[in-house]
Image 1: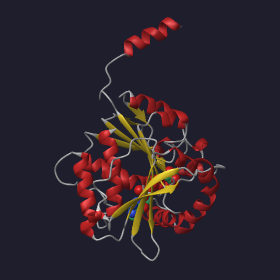
Image 2 (image 1 turned 60 degrees about the vertical axis):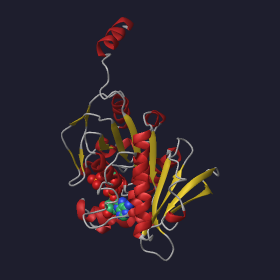
Image 3 (image 1 turned 30 degrees about the horizontal axis):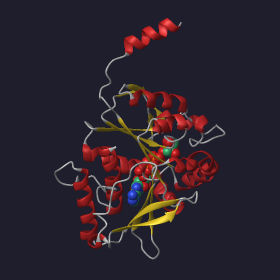
Image 4 (image 1 turned 180 degrees about the horizontal axis):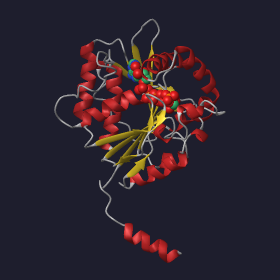
Length: 308
Ligand SMILES: Nc1ncnc2c1ncn2[C@@H]1O[C@H](COP(=O)(O)OP(=O)(O)OP(=O)(O)O)[C@@H](O)[C@H]1O
Ligand SMILES: O=C(CO)[C@H](O)[C@H](O)COP(=O)(O)O
């Protein structure tokens, strides 16, 4: 047996292509904004450099089958997480995977899809930071953490227009999911290098963003960006994290004058060093809505992706 393993290792020892895959996780509960954030990044840099997929593809059961089961998609038992872990290990080595496929539009499982990693891979979904093994495959990790009121509103609007649910069904689903969200999804927050929360500040309807820049990875140096000229758009302060440890919190105002937010975006884009203009996809929520705090959060992530 050992000689067979050695023979296989010799036969499969090819140079990985691309040479090094930078792996990023974007975790969070349903409708916390993971796909919106990821889509803007992929479009900004292009699929030749960034590829992404969603861990919802590892659902074990389709929507119809789930109706008769005692758990929700937020339960590990409802997902092939061991296969997800195997795939993450292959991707980090630059190897292709044949990934399952889940269709949100109608809740069905589709044909498997070939996924060939590009130089940067984003894995977004409910479970990327689920286990020690899955976490070990990522260079940088983020957790999206909007307040429940915001997430519920986003989920109702999205699921009733794009996933075929009624408002009553979404509300009942949210209630059923709560214990599993607490047990399996929210603990992943503790394992993220960046914790991003889009939320309104008191008395304002626009959404601001707060990004915890945890010292678990080198964070971008922002001292030349957060100057008096950008004070109305963003500032940083030291706060206490959930575990009581001090952490830098970057606050990006949703109600800032456009010129000040734009300056932060331009300075970050320059620091990233890709040249050209800031891609129009950054900050895009829909074909008619743009959010400067979202664009700035995406630029912070992009800085990690290009410089990790
Ligand atoms: N930063 C944002 N600002 C305003 N609205 C947002 C933002 N991010 C997402 N949304 C809204 O929330 C909805 C849900 O977001 P999205 O589909 O990205 O969540 P998700 O975390 O990928 O969800 P799921 O895990 O259920 O697929 C979107 O349709 C969009 O309208
Ligand atoms: O928690 C979710 C993450 O997107 C979804 O609700 C889950 O993937 C099941 O999908 P759907 O009911 O939309 O088909």
